[in-house]
Image 1 (cartoon, rainbow, N blue to C red):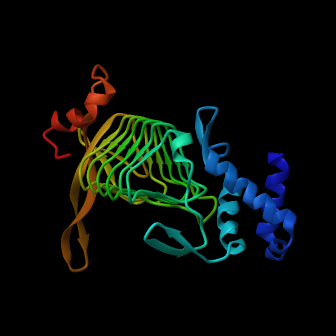
Image 2 (cartoon, rainbow, N blue to C red; image 1 turned 60 degrees about the horizontal axis):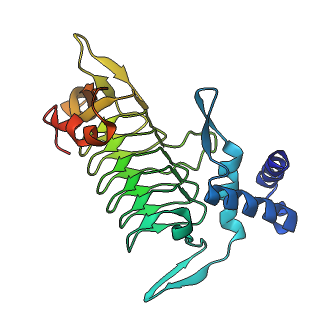
Length: 272
C-alpha cells in the first residue's frame, strides 16, 4: 500500500490536474492521517542514518490545495483556516494546556506535554517531550524522546524544496529559552543549547574546547553544550562581529539525563 500511495502522490505532484480525481485526493488524505497517527514520518532513521521521505512532504504540500477554508469554533474562540486541529489527546496520552494547539497531521506521542505552544502539520514529537510556553515546532520537524523545548524556542519548518532535510532534534536534547533552530539543522542526541542560541544552515558552530577550534555547519554533535557567540568578519565598511554558536563542553555521561538538562548548562555557568 505505501508503494501505491507513493506513486499516486508523485503523479499528483507532477500533474496537479489529478487533484480533481477522488483516487488522488484519498491518497493525500491517507498520508496525512498516517502522519497524524505516527504511522508515517517525513524523516526516519534507516540503517543508522536519517532519511527524508520527500514524497510524504509532497503529500503535505498537496494537502493544502485540496482543502477548503472553513470556520472553526472552539468555545469562544474562532479560527478561519484550511486545516483541522488535532484531537483525541486523552486517548493518545498527551497533556495539552489551554492555548496549546497542534494541527491535524502532526504526531504527538504518549507523554508529550504542550504548554501554550504550537505544533504544525507533518511534525513528529516523540514520547515524554515538553513543548514549553510559546515554543513552536514547524512543519515536518522531527523532535525526539524526552526533549525539553524551553519557553519561546523556535523549531523551523521545512517544506520546500521537498528534498531538503527538516529540522531534527534527537533524543534527550535540551533547548534553552528563545533558542532558534531552522533550515534543516540537525541537533544530535543529548545536546544542550543555551538561551538565545540561533542555528541556521550557514551558522558557524565552533568547538572551542580543544587547543584549536573545530568548525561545524548544520549539525550539533551529540552531548555538546552550546552557547551564543560571535566572530570578527571583514566587510568593505570595516570589521564587525557576526553571530555564531560555540561548543564549550560536553554533557557528563555519568549524570542522569533528567537532571543533567539544566545542570549541563550550570556546570559551565551558562544561562538556561
